[in-house]
Amino acid sequence: MGSPRFFAIWGSVGVALKEWPNRDQRIHYAWHLLFWFLPVVFIQWIVAGPMLLAYSWHVLVPTLAIGTYLCLADWYAIQKGIWYFDPKQITGWKIAGEMPWEEAAFFYITSLLVAQTFLILLPATLR
Image (cartoon, rainbow, N blue to C red):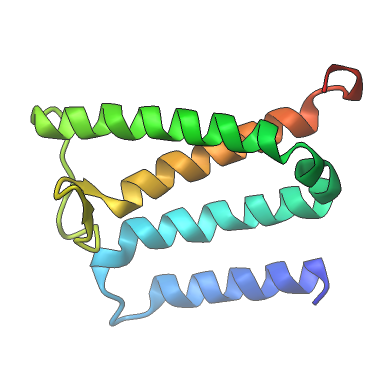
């Protein structure tokens, strides 16, 4: 499937799902997270797939380290009552009974996007 066609279909599906009258509001966070972030990951792999694969360790380590740090900091904030989530906006599946899986996915996907973008934009002589 060609990229322009893929994005046209993706956009159409997004509009249809956003306007779907019986859509459960509890998938709101997950829907936005996956609908808006995954195409960017897809584009990065179209643009620089072989390079990202060759330097996969340089993407994996920072993604896991930073994503885990952010999850732990968020878990602490939730435990202390500093941070909370509207139960109407999340699916209800929680890690360690506290942190919504959507929040952990957000931190890891964001860390992945930053690591991949940094590597893509880094001059070849510095890789």
